[in-house]
Image 1 (spheres, one colour):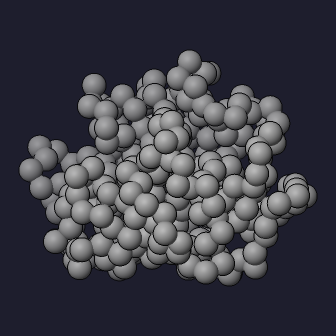
Image 2: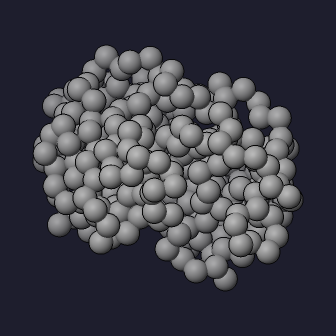
Length: 150
Length: 150
């Protein structure tokens, strides 16, 4: 599961088995980035259009989505180790706690992006502002509360 | 698991087993609201201070969190059914898709709130802006990207 070694100052803990609750993948995210190294550190509103594919049983859940300008997207960062509570990001002066970072390495590797809605073309949702690798599995999609609907 | 009957226009699907990924509860949220009926529909920046308790192995992950003004909080909505893809909220003209609603009823019942940080007093984090019931289990905590640190 680990994709990197521990750096000086980092702290790994014995993670309890991740069996408190279970997730179902509701879709798959298609982006231009094949690897984490190729993906941007952070999504941008003028980034490329990415396609979120919704799996069949959940397609009706897109009804009405086109009315919104911005969405929260939650996805599963399957490449990330989960046991680091202190991390030393490159260039940081001192190790920081995982909850004080948006690093993909976290006890529950959930990615969260606010994106701009481009179009809803079931089973696809087209958005700008993602930064995840191609093939990332989708967990949830919600209208952003702070934005008015179009 | 169901806490409500189906209303006219709503659509339930056979949910695949939620076994694609597993979560670990990293803490517990203490709020003034014992039931969903008592909780506000939406958190407010001038709402009461709520206490997020971090479980022991994860407390070091709070290091550096005090520098941020606003956080994203992700939590587990254990009272919610998961199988509705169309929902008829009270007062809505027509059923809406689950992904076009912030309803707690969703395939992966993850709640997401942007909150104002009041204080970090390990193992507690004090915040304003939550709307969940007392005892809700914490999944993740991240600094909000759009806000500068204090």
